Amino acid sequence: VREPDLAGRHVVVSAGGTREPLDPVRFLGNRSSGKQGYALARSAAARGARVTLVSANASLPDPAGVDVVPVGTAVELREAVLRAAADADAVVMAAAVADFRPATYAVGKIKKKDDQEPAPITLVRNPDILAEIAGDRARSGQVIVGFAAETDDVLANGRAKLKRKGCDLLVVNEVGEHKTFGSEENEAVVLGADGSETPVAHGPKEALAETVWDLVAERLG
Ligand code: PMT
Image (cartoon, rainbow, N blue to C red; front, side):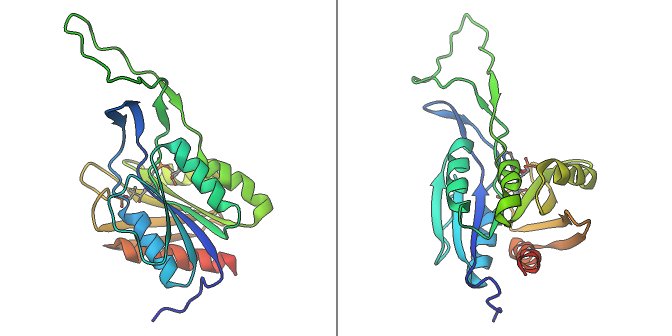
């Protein structure tokens, strides 16, 4: 049985992938299943934390004893995370958040016109939620954890991302069409703003979740 080292703590976890609608039937999305975020939520609850799980489009059962807030888009995810983060001790952003969304939403289904080229899709930037909460934490004393989904130069990109986002810990994992997304397993290196590097060997997403909470618990003191 695990020591309840997160008892009395409120933690916020985001999971899944945002969907950015083009029209009532289409969206821009990504391959996140939510499994890594749900594993983090279950693990934190087992360690005694009060857990808010902001879940974007995941088709997974609600973890027992966890407060699940369903969202669709990046803008909705931002609102839910910021609201829950107000009294949180730690925030872990495992969700795959779209960096861009379509500039316009067509109220009716976009029609194909046989005599015309397809219309280009114009994108606008979504808010960077992780950078925003990491910027706020100077006041709040929260531990902020990001994930980095990389396909190449994984560690170098991860280190640059840790600096850019300003979080305390960044879990760097490699992704691909058939890698990490949707699978039961993951492997990663957790980079710390203090220069630490914690490798996590290939194994169940639960194992990575436990290491993340070990590092968070250390930083909460
Ligand atoms: O859900 P699974 O199928 O189990 O897959 C797990 C996972 C691969 C989705 C997960 O382990 C993972 O890597 N999640 C982060 C995916 C991602 O969006 O990475 P990124 O490198 O694009 O973003 C970096 C960080 O900034 C992330 O913490 C992300 O939540 C956050 N972000 C990104 C964009 C944005 N506009 N706002 C953000 O807060």
